[in-house]
Image (cartoon, rainbow, N blue to C red; front, side, top):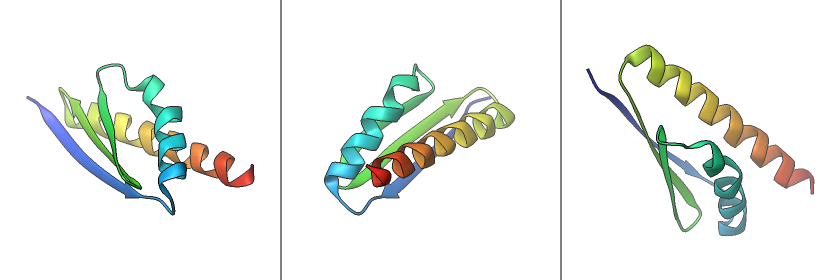
Length: 74
């Protein structure tokens, strides 16, 4: 079975979106395909099971959240 999730996250600015993408893309390694469309971060997550997909999605969103918080504190 293949499970897939598409995710769209809009940021306040293109600069913030670029920094977040740069921060989280190092961990993509075949599980996540991330790209930038202006100030919108688009990600596609693929997995072989729903539970694995949910785990990857949870990790990805946590990393995006942490990266965003760090960027806003600078």
